[in-house]
Image (cartoon, rainbow, N blue to C red; front, side, top):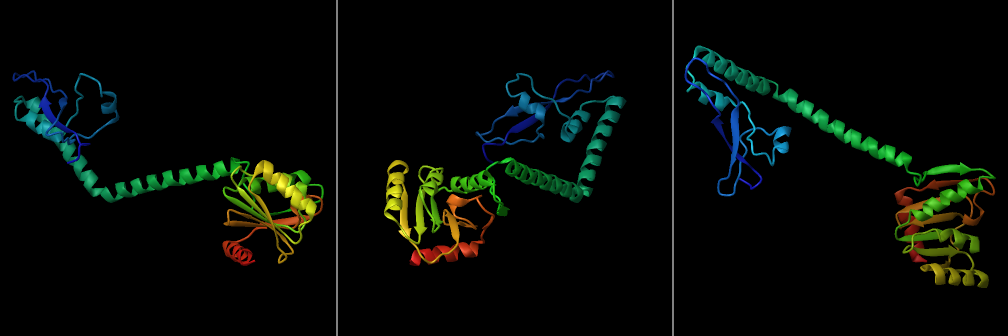
Length: 265
């Protein structure tokens, strides 16, 4: 037996042998055997509150009543003892005959708890303002809404951001500074002017972890987060919201293909 078990013994609190029998609770006292404890009496909430109590708790047990009935001699005491023992027997039979039902009820309760936990996660996700939609359309004039979407995507990165965009300028770099401090940014664009190279150097000097490379294989815009998520953007990062554009989060298979093609360049 492990050290977490408790051993309890049952003792008669008091009784008289004349016809005025006082049937009381049975005292539950704790003892230790070789530092190993075992609990023979079912725990209840009250036991926890009696942790530092000097008074032993009381509980009826079938064995205790049987022991008490061997001592008490009055007719009333015998009848009460028999009634209590019969109650224990009936309870044991009920539990045995309804064991499957009780187990199913226990399973239902556990599933209900799991469902409640999942619903709680859903509600938290709905309340989370940083939740990123997987697809959508923005119309001309929705400049801030589109800007906010891109900001959420940028802030979601934990390790790296790869932006494929053929129209990058200082506005793009400014937007990307919303990233977490240690996130590395790789910019892929079809041409790198001296001004753009200087902008990247300045951004890298202040914010760190910016790099830019020439990439001519893409017409569309993509932003890759932590090499696990890819968002397709219908407009350049600097022009979001100026005209109609759509965006969508791509499936995992597409993510792997895009990353593999980039690494081959």
